[in-house]
Length: 318
Image 1 (cartoon, helix red, strand yellow):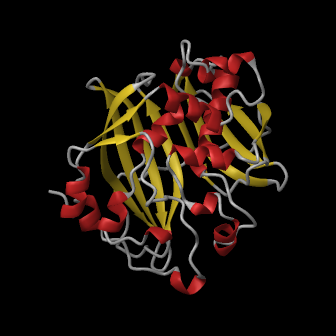
Image 2 (cartoon, rainbow, N blue to C red):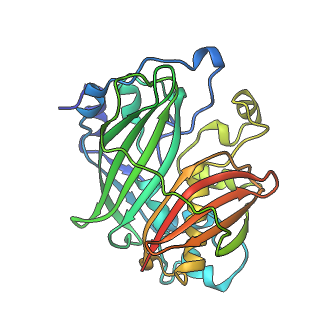
């Protein structure tokens, strides 16, 4: 049964639009030091959590808007056209992160949303997403990891997206909860990041982001003021508003499609990365790629600051 009746009433049988409710950002402003320590996670409550499935509807407009928000078409390349033109439109696979987004359960489990930071994403693609229609999303918590008393706890959230009764994508999202460690050790399934080699990369590329990119991406639903309000960003410890981590992940998806899939989203079988630091809109992402027998490892750095933004990246193509 659902641990929170209000959550059940809100989620049960609902059909949501593509956009996410404004009330729940995943990447939240950092708390002052004295407020960062919290209660340890409650493994029994979290692992018993049951959230009713929900339906998400989307259409051509949302498909095109997402592609533009992650930078496709920005350079005017003809190869990007199928993602930003309704005639024969192709769906950027990382749109699945927007379809899967749901943080209503966090407060219901007694976790302060302000202590939660998005740590990583791992997407497995089983079939292409339809260019429009309805997606059914089933979410569950599959594991916890304990970084120790007074430190952080990791929550592993799995969302299965199905269309027409067939699984299209599995989204594994890692959430880091500050000050929530010390609950007795790992529980359930714990995801390990992909290790990157120490050797020089086999390929590199650079992708410029737009100064207004966060303004575009927030229209998809994540209205966290951290990404638009300079005062909120400064309060959180940033020089100015930062780009959504999910947008940076989408930019990486678009670059993998360009470099290794010949712009064919059907060829992308998996995409994963760990969020290592913020990216400011207008900065340039320098990508490094390593080819391996199992797939392609990658890292993305903010060129202007030489700061790693995405790390332990991994893509599997066919």
